[in-house]
Image 1 (cartoon, rainbow, N blue to C red):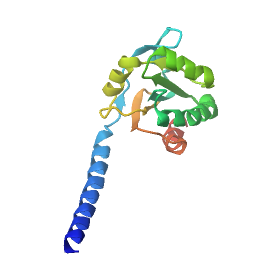
Image 2 (tube, rainbow, N blue to C red; image 1 turned 30 degrees about the vertical axis):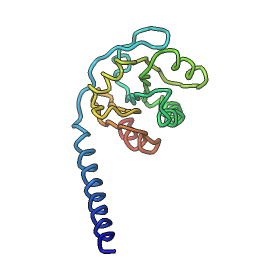
Image 3 (cartoon, rainbow, N blue to C red; image 1 turned 135 degrees about the vertical axis):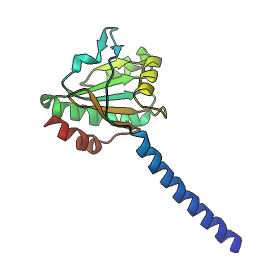
Image 4 (cartoon, rainbow, N blue to C red; image 1 turned 120 degrees about the vertical axis):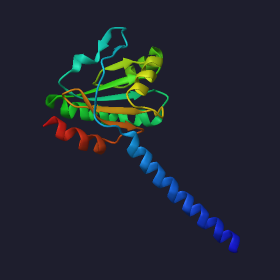
Length: 171
């Protein structure tokens, strides 16, 4: 009985330390505001796009893949937010981390109202350069009108979370 109690206490202490460490590391993972670098990626038709095409807009740049359930779960909210805030200068940009064929099939079945660029392996490298040090998918950046990255979000991003960040940027 005494040994079981010690094991439970040790497990609770380890859990508490793990949660604390995660909080510390997640805070450390969010670097200060930094400038979004220039980059080019093709769309589904092969046309190259430079990120500067959307200069002056609030950008939500989402690295995603068709094989990623949390990615697919986010997309309807992204479509709704794009529709709701387009006139205020919001622009979502999806960067697919895979080849053209599965992305094209998915896009054909889904009415995405924002640009989708094909990143493939280059997209993975770009996401890492933009702060995705844990190789999370999805991975989302929010960029202000001045081209500064104001938020980096590994993992699923809810509509409410995004709205809290973009609302002050759109005013």
